[in-house]
Length: 128
Image 1: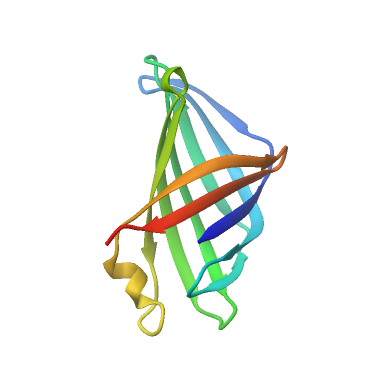
Image 2: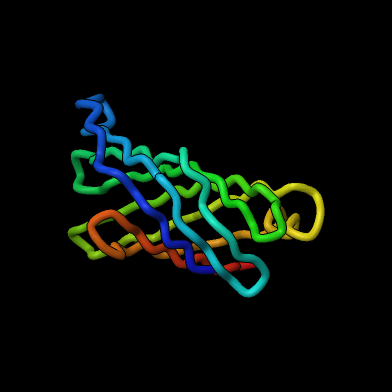
C-alpha cells in the first residue's frame, strides 16, 4: 500500500533526556493498495526525537478513511539512522470488524521518503 501524507511545519518541543523533540502535524492525504484505498483524515501527528547516537525515532498516529467508509487507526513507528542511510517503519493497524479486519492480524514493514516539502510517501508491505 502506498500512503501519501500531507504534513505541516514541525513544531519544536525542546530537549528531553530522550533527545530533541518535535511534532509534525499530519493534515491529510491519500492511500491506495490492492485491498483498500481512501483518504488520510486531518488531525494526525508524527512525534519525533533525535537521539544523541544520531538515530531519529518516529511515532506517527493517524486515521485512514476507506472509500467504503471504514475508519482505520494507524500507529507507525520508525527509526532513521543517517550514518547508515537506514529508515524503516513498522505500522500497526486497528481496523473495525468486517472486510478490513485482516489488517488487525498481520505484520507490516515499510519505507518512508519525502514526496515534496509538505509531503511524505510511505510504502507498506505485509509480512505475514
